[in-house]
Each structure stands twice: as structure tokens, then as C-alpha cells.
Length: 462
Image 1 (spheres, rainbow, N blue to C red):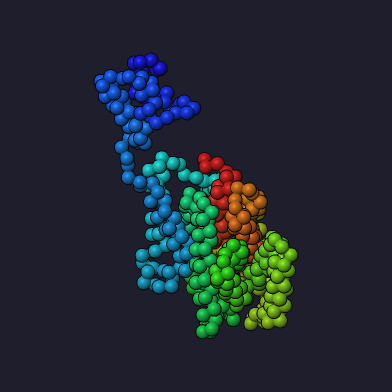
Image 2 (image 1 turned 90 degrees about the vertical axis):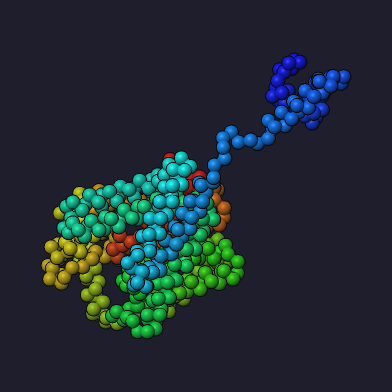
């Protein structure tokens, strides 16, 4: 392409590849000769124009409207609103909204937008190995258990709820793809958690108590479940406070104070143990001797205050009886698993089967829930459900610990990973004295841990 008859494209390429390439016009003039004729100069000007046109960033196909980015932003915004609604439960707070199912509408809208985004960008859905596949296996086992359940309709409704949890997990791992978005979700959880915390305190001040225990509404009407959910939020607020400016740090610690006060007023022994475990883990994970000492002082002070003032109104004898009830439910759960080792008695059906498998002293005491999440998984879904559930939690804890040390995250990202790990530990400690197999919040934390691994580059998007 160096001859006299070289095309404009070739001359353009030759001019650009030289070490000391001059402007295109001068380069072409040097190639054509100094005494070029008028016709040559005219041809040269046309060539220059052609070369400059070639160098312009002209798209290879007609421009399309940017429809890919907008669904992603809107989809993530709907996810944040959905997370807040899980805590605020507006349909329970304002009964007039119950007919519209606002949380479900938001979740479905977010999923539809996610599907549109994936189709527009020709992308596949992310599930994340192994957490996503373990959750899928557990939900599948729970759905299978409905066919042999003691109460098929009850099991079916619980299976549908688990399918919703699976879709929420899918929404999280496909939209929470940056540290900024991860921080926004944690903020939504912290802000949302203020609704049950403040509602519980307000109910206590107005004397709305059940056996002397504070509670709220909806799923938070169960004091034990309310307390354990708030325990999970304490480490999330603590880790975000460490990377915030002073004014926000004060707000985070005010939120922690509200959570702890609400947990205290529920008089939930299991949640109190979980809160102590969370504070110990946070003290261990804090960097710097001063912070460790501060967390230790807060822990010891809280334990001393609780020991001096924390009593339940049901009396010492009745407290002993409630402990016996918990042991009886665990024994009944083991009996259910022994009789139905493959798929259990059906998801959420342990309470139905309890009178048949309870110890003799409790057979006539009515139906009781299994007060241990591990035994609940065994009794309701059998080995086919328990194995993926146990591996899901174990992998979540392990990977949160690993990604918290990863170089793929910023220091603030690693702190958020630590907060997620401690939050999941809090749920599992509380789960030793409560049946929270169908609770949404541990699965949401596992989804955020999987997203954190994705952000750190620890997994491939396959």
C-alpha cells in the first residue's frame, strides 16, 4: 500500500503507524510529492477528508436507545424498597393496604424489570455456586415434602413462601454487584429495622405486653422472632458506623441502642444469648486494642445490667416448665425425623405432628413448634432438606470469613463482609432455641454474602 495507487484507507494506516507521524494532510502531501499538480492537490484534499472521516468514531450499526441501564437502576431501587417493607410491613401497619399486597407488587415489579434487563443485554441470570444451588436444592426438598406432609395445604403455603425467598435471593445476587449497592442494601435493612424496634418500644410504653413481654405486629408479634431479627441488625449497623462520618456514626449507634433496648424488653433468652455472641464476635474482629476494650466493657456492662434487672413475669416454676417444653419439642422433632428420615413430616408441619410424637407428658398439652432450627429442618424436610440447608449456612459463614480477608474488596467492603458473617452467626445462635427455618432474613444475608463474593471476584458469573 506504499505505491502511488494506494487507497486513502491504506495511506491513513501508513501515516498513523509511523513513529513521528505528522498531521494527516502533511503526511499525505509528503507521500504525494511537493510539486503536485492542481488535480493532485484536489485529490489530496479529498483524501484528507476521507481519512478524517474514517478516523471518526462512527458506530457500526444504528444507535439504539439505552434501555439496558435504566431497568438495572430501577430494579435495584425496588429491591431496596422491598427490603425495607420486609421490616416495616406496611400492609400490617396500615390495614387498608393489605388488599394491594404492596411488598409482593414491588417484588414482582423488580423481577419483571430484571428479566427485561437480562433479555435486553443478552445476559444470563447469576445464581452463584454453591450458595445458590444449595438454596435451590433445599427449596426443592421442601416442595417435595408437601406431597407426603401431615397437612398438605399448610406445607404448600410454606413451600410457596420458600419459592419467594429463592426469587428474592436471585434478585439480590443479580442486582447487588458493587460495594456501593451492598452498602445501600445494608442501610435499607438498618432503617427498616427501626420500624419494629420503635414499634416495640412504643407498645411497651403503652402497656401492650403478652405475659410481660414486648412485641409488635405481624411476624414481629412473636417476641422471640422479633428479638432474633433485631440481633441480626446489630453487627450490620456496627460495621457501617466504623466507616461513616461522625454525625452518621451517632445515628448508627442510636439505632443499635434502639435494637438492644427492644431485644431486652422482649425477654427472649435465646436472643439475649445471640446478642452476647454477636458482641463477642464484634469485639474479636475489631482492629485496635482500644476498640476491643470498648466492646468488652459494653458487653460486661450489658451483662451486669441484665443480671440485675432482667426477669420474666411467668415465675421461676413456670420458667422451668417452658424449658421442659423446649426440650420436649426437640425430642418430638427427633422422633419425627426417625419416623420420616427422607422428607420429614412436611415443611411447616412439625407443629401439626407434635401431638403424635411428643413425650407422654406433653401429648395432651396441645401443638408446639420446634424450638431449634436444626431439629426443625430435620423433622420437616428430612435428610434431603437438612443437608443442603446445613451446607448453605456453613458455606455462607465460611465464604463471608474468606471474603472478609480478600484483596478484591476495599477496607470498607471487607468490614461489611465481617458484619454479614457476624449477623449470620447471630441468627444461628438464636436458632438454637427457636425455629426460624421459614424466616426470610438469614437467607437474605446469605444472598448478600454471595453478592460480596461476586463483587470481590471470588466467583465467576456463570
